[in-house]
Length: 459
Image 1: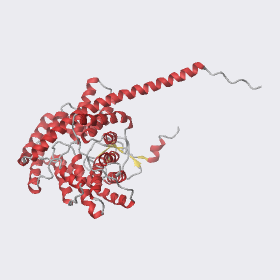
Image 2 (image 1 turned 90 degrees about the vertical axis):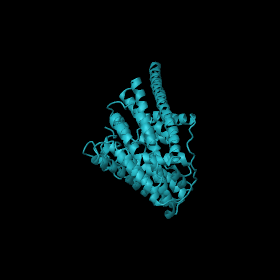
Image 3 (image 1 turned 45 degrees about the vertical axis):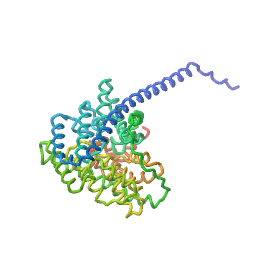
Image 4 (image 1 turned 30 degrees about the vertical axis):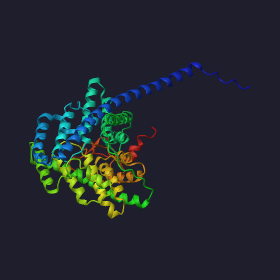
């Protein structure tokens, strides 16, 4: 006779069920905590972005009706230089400081960063400097969020995650792209790696930031929506254009860094650098007109309307922006990169026999993808701005631009986890060389792919 089945140990089953419930409760508490913290970060990002955007619109409108303000470019540059020299402290490092504090926290982000970059960017746009919005929004959001972390005494690891979420909140709020904002925050820190541990607060912050800006009454411009059928020939042409977008992104980063380095060597007293930059910009405005001052959104509007533009247009916008930011005027790089990419796409559309408006839209996001090393975020941004009907062209353009933009980018303190165009994974913690855009690993030995994968094999 067979023996009867063993009687279930009721106490053991209850212990297992209790342990499982306790684990789920811990996960739920953790999730709710980070949703709340992400929402606070997003609210700070949304409020600061709204103030910045409303003021920027007023400043831009005033400048457009008073052309004589460009004559104040040198004086404004000197004022900005003096303020940052004697009042800026560590805030002068801007976005580079934010990424450094995420990678290797040393001290709090300066509280003065937010008001300095806000006033400096408004002044830059008032006199016609070619700058954008993203850098200012990121710095304001990061400064305010880190102040909150300091007040509530968050642990260092939690503070880093909240700083990451502040990037998503600012990006989503200032451009009206909440999903792209979240992915940007996870992707921008390290080339070849996405920080999934910050997914919940980053997504929450980006959504809340966008909702706050909308709720306060700021309306982002609605872009044209595309519906493009699958076409292999079209995608091949977009890939060819993507090479040009990537090389343009690399050229912009190289020129901006070269101008910054040259002025630092020639002019040891830093306030003179934006003054000289202001003189150069004034000369360019007198030679080329006012189209390339400020955000230059009318140029990209013409591109997205299907107007073919000369290659000179994107080259001049690139030059104006590189001088503005390289000489030390505060502001962002992203909106000028949108314009550079959009106008380059409009110039490439006719020779490639591609719809000018479509290629302008791809260039709009692809040049930024190459310059910021964030292809996923930019492809998603293309979908959020221009519709899902052109998802594949956006993806192809952004990925190709990312590959061909080298490691040089607009964020020198980005770290490198996987080098582009290589089956080697660089030592974790590598960063981009500020002068040459090269991979500079913290350790001198690169980790081979099989060595990296072996870390996940059974012991």
